[in-house]
Structure formats: structure tokens, C-alpha cells
Image (cartoon, rainbow, N blue to C red; front, side, top):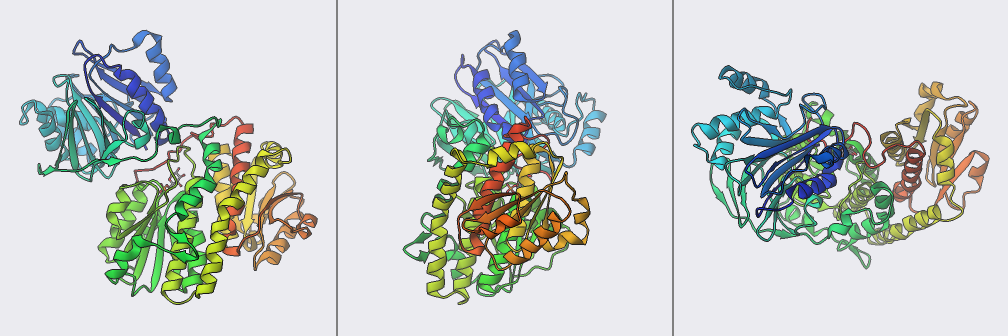
Length: 622
Ligand code: G6P
């Protein structure tokens, strides 16, 4: 949800290229408009802004408006919240004088009253955005009490603001100073040689540095070519050591794949192996991340588990509900974060909250979890992003270790989240004495087989006998597809439907297979196919019966089934086979052909797979 970047370095740097290249890596965060402000060597702050994707901005700049090299610049790619996605609302936003310029990710909740206040004292607004109020507030403090001290002006202005923000601010009077600040929005500092960077996310600056400082909530950083200083909103100095990022820029490139989404689908065996690393070994399960919680007795008294998440992460939580219920015999509820927050949830120290958010910055999830903490519930976070906002709200963090996921739709973070939830479920089951050692060993062995089994599905899909792409081309012409499943097959169906609608824009819905006949079956006809999740399970026969009901209505049926199941051929027009595994683990295998199917349908329809319309990878507004 909006990406920001900033640079400060020596005179004569091609800052425009650095900003545009970085914005390209952040485009997954939003692509409604893009803009840069560059302080050129002539001391002039040049502003370029365009509605639409970054390519529009690049084209404008290439058409003869390329700013002269300079020491300082900021850039932005937008996912619109306040104000339409046009040129005027594109960031960066200047103040009245044109000396100061701001980019912002987040929402200023009290912007209407602040705007009124600023207008009353003569400030002229030129956009409909909430961000512009920051430019005028900072102008007010900069030329007033802060007396041209940019960091102080930013600090004084932010004290007036409620809401969420990650911002970068520059002043034409300070060619060697870049100021950034964050509150409930991600912002990192990259340390270079005589140059420094600000960005929403690591891939944007990985080409230049792997030394990163992750700013904490309510911190302001002042970057100069040879120094970085950090203070809190109340002015207290903060010392923070950088961390070294151990993946390189290549991990965030397409590596020959036509799309990030396809690359990330094919990275899933490796992502799963990484999530098992250090946790499953020689028939033992280790979750050292939970040791502290256990020592503090936070897991002793758990009567109930509430899983809070959004989108694909919510589907991972639904799968976890089924298995943790069974393995630990603890009642588990999975709830979408946006509903959880307003449900006045019953929470106490006996309710374990599990927050799942691959980005670690989804506002709905953060707000929900904050509330859970206030009510005394212990919290475990599952996320892919080190030191992301959710990690500061949690008693323990289980990282996915999946590597960067650039495609807007979640693929490898889905399988890694489910895998981590399996390990957590087994851990809780063991802790409560519900799973015996030999059962655990059998399950861990099955878990360790999954990466190779996924590889097998991917190899077949890349070979000459692949049917997924061919079927995807046929199905790409339909306007609606239904998905059904039972037990863990139900959230699998939901995830299959979500992937398809997110990237191909075909209407798709997932249903519990037994529920279809209670209404939604009315939607089926010969033009509306159905995809059934019919892998081996204790409800297999029931799913087959539901599929028969559908076929009786002339709908074409595609089934995901377990290798060796010949009987299913009688009931299905087409089949995607996946290897056999324990029923609990079947979602991880059944999901793979559904991801590939959605991908190929989207490609066949000419959709932008990596950046689907209206979506953003992380949604930092409620
Ligand atoms: C956005 C993305 C979805 C994602 C959801 C939750 O809506 O478009 O793909 O599943 O956020 O993201 P999270 O980072 O919290 O897992």
C-alpha cells in the first residue's frame, strides 16, 4: 500500500535512476500513480508525477524531462486511498513555497481538521490527498518555531498527526539531508558508502546495500551522506545497530521467469525446506521461538485459540483451525481481522491469539492484535518480514523464512504459513500430551516429504504431459467457476478461488461441498464449471457425492485428486493428480495445481499477473 524511497549522497549522482529503479521494486505495493522529486545540482527541486504505473512516469521523464544529477531525492508509488489516482494526487506533495516536499504511505486520520486549520491561516492545497496536509504542517513548523531545522519541523508536525505514516521529506535548503519517519507503516534505512537510502522495503535498495536499519514505531531518522541519526517523536536519541540482509538482489529478480508469481510458485519446495530448517530434524520438532513464552507460563493455561488474519493468510488460518482442533484438542476459531476488531471479542490470558500476516503490516491484523494484547491475550505472530510491525505486538514470532515474495498474490508465503502452522499445531499437541512420540515422528516424516512432493507436481507441470496449462486455456473463456471441498479441502477451495479471481478476474467462489446444494447450486449450468478438491480424506466419499450432484446439473467438473485414485475418473471430466500425503497436509499439495491453473488462466486472458488491478500486496489501511 504505497511504496516510498529516498536517497541522499554526493553531488552529481544520477538520483533519478536510483529512485525509479527502487520504485520499480516497490510497485507491488501500489500502482495507481508514481512520482519523484529530485534536488538537482542547480539547487532546484524538480517534481515529476504521473497517474498510472511507474512506466508512465518513466516515459514522461524519458521524453526530455530527465532531471540533472543531484545529491538528494524522494519517490513514491501509490495505492490510492484519499483522492482519485490522477496526476494532481500523485506524490511527492510540495508545500506552498515549493521548497519542501513529502512522500507518504499510510493515512492521516485527522487530515480534514488539520487541512481546515492550515487553510484558515492561508495555505493553498492543490490535491485531494490526506498527505498534502503533512507538507503544509511541516511548512508551518519549518518556517515558524523550528527555524528551518528540517528534523525538528518534521517532529513538531508529526506530533499533531493521528493515523499511520511512513514518510520521507526533503528541503531545497538542505541538499545533504533526508528525513524519514514512521508510525504503523514500514520504513527502513539503507547504509551505503557516502550515501544513504530510505525505503518501504528491502528489495528497493538491495542493489546498493545489504546493511539495513529497521526503524521502530514513532522514530524519525535524519540521513546525511556520512551519517544517520535517529530520534523518537519526543526527541530522545536512539542507537540502533544495522542488520545484514543475507539474501542478495537476485532473490528479488525474476531469474528468467516471465512473472514473479510463476517464479514464486516454483520456489515453493525451497521455501518449505527453509521453513522446516532448524525446526524439524531427526524426528524431533523444535520451536525455540516459543521457549520464552513457555518459560513465562503463557502457554500453560490456554483454553482457546483465536487466529486473526486477512486474505490468503486467513485461509491458512482456516486450515490450521481444522488441524489444531484435532491435534491439540483446543477449540480454535479463525476470524478475518477486519471482523475480529469490531466483534468485541471475548479474550483473556486463556486465549492464545495467532496473528498470520506474511507482510507483517496489514492494518486490520495489527489493530486486531493490539486489541487482543490490551485484553491480556498472549500473541504468537507468523510473518515473513523480519522486524515488521506485527513482531512488536507479539510474545513470540515464527518467521516463514520464505525469502522475498514480490508477486502481489501470495503463493510461497501461503505454503510456508501453512507449514509453520502445522509445526505449531504439532507442538501444542505434544505439549498437551495429545500426540504420542511415534505419531509425531510419522507426521514429521510426512511433513519433510512435502517439498519433494511439491517439486514432483511442478516438474510434471513443466513437462510434455502437463494438462494444467491446456485446461487453463479452455477455462479462460468462462465467466464464473465454483470451487468445493470439505474439511481442510474447504479452505483449499477458498484459496483456489481467491487465486483465480485475484489474477484472472474470473468470478470464482469456494464453498463447503455439502453446503452447495443449499442454495449456490442454482448458479451451476453447462457454462459454469466446478473444481472439486477430492484428495484422499475421511470425507472423500461425501465429496464425490457432491460432485455427482453437480454433474447432474451438466456442469463440467475438474477434480484435484490423489495419485492412484482411478475411481475418480468416473466422476470427473478432468483431473489434476497430486501425490499422496496425510489428510491434514493435503492442502499444501492440492493448492499447487490450483495456483498454476490460476496463473495460466490469467496469462491466457492477458492479465497483469504480478500486479493485478485494484490490489496491493500489503494493505496498511483499515
Ligand atoms: C492483501 C493482499 C492479499 C493478502 C492480504 C493479507 O489484501 O492483496 O494477497 O493475502 O493482504 O496480507 P498479509 O500480509 O497480512 O498476509
